Image (cartoon, rainbow, N blue to C red):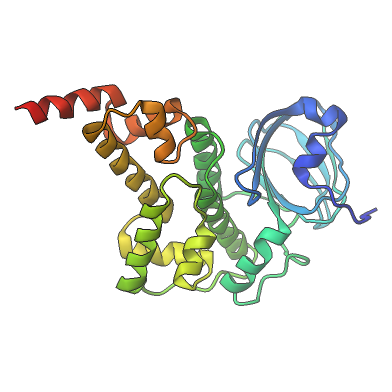
Length: 299
């Protein structure tokens, strides 16, 4: 039965026996929840939850039967297979082998307006025809893999990344389901681009969201992300990280601030997180960079 419930997918996984199966749980600003779950063979059924849930099978090789909201299915899983579960539907799933899943749970209240605007009203969360299908999408696997890589580097992904990743995933799901997002043409107006860049610079220490930037440009998050990339050359999240690295370099060169304080000033939770991101972009450690610029200033 699909009785109404206020449970989210993550809340259900925190209850009772389910909690012991969770390996990773991240929640960037309530925009989407990331979970990695390892479970034994058997019944995976759950009550109706308030999220749309995307699953990626990390192992494959088992028989999976059930209903995720799109009718009964019975398949032999492969590593990398994807499936989408409908919101407010009590899923029934049986798996005949141990399995490991990555899951992205999208709260409907966070995504309905974004999808309505991006798909010109042609997208229905209640009748999305891809629910319950096992499908393949290298594009979605790439986005999901990037989210987990960011988790390892930075902890929970930023709200900026979470919304942008979700827009990419839903754009591909809509394409596969026959209701593609409306195309984006052209970039942002120069004045709008400048305003958004200034807003990012002013809030380097904060977890700025794609929604806030899109509101500055009076666009949907989906269209803003694509138009920003056309104007600037990189997605908003990448540009924001570049600004943070530029500021970190400036503070390392011109101040004696401890690295932990620099990390907080450029929006990272610890010096360790800043160190990982900094090395990825600058190909040297924070202390090596500080010594190098100090030596150059003495020449």
